[in-house]
Amino acid sequence: MDSRLIWIAATVALPVAGLVYRQRYVGINSAVKAAYGWLWKVALDKKTCKVAEEFCLEAAVLWFVFPLLDSIYDPAKRGSPVLTQAYVFALVFLIFAVILAHVGKDG
Image 1 (cartoon, rainbow, N blue to C red):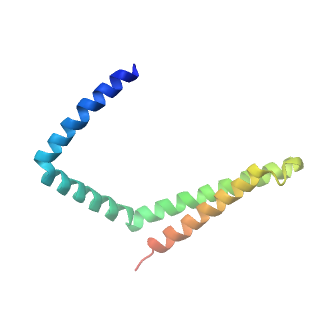
Image 2 (image 1 turned 45 degrees about the vertical axis):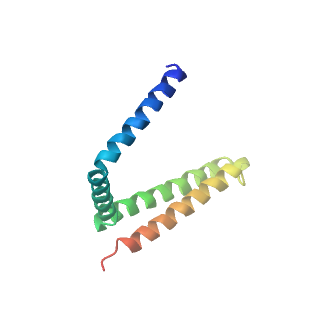
Image 3 (image 1 turned 60 degrees about the vertical axis):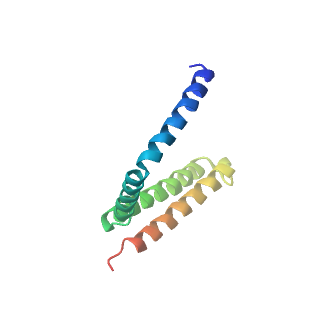
């Protein structure tokens, strides 16, 4: 697609979107507020936190175990920056899992 066509579409679409928002801003703002409230409630739900915690734990294990096995089978890769980054990712996912465990615990 030609880039000029994209710019023409954007210059037409933005003012039209602005006009629609100007006429219906109260309804749009209330819908956005309701959607945000629902998403926030779902994100902090105990079941959602438990699923996200399990995912982060599994991701941490995978990011830790596979580079460890790689360094065991190929000792030349020990100390590689890629392995160090993988261990950092594993630590980050572990921290996320701990935070989610505290957010989703029974109060």
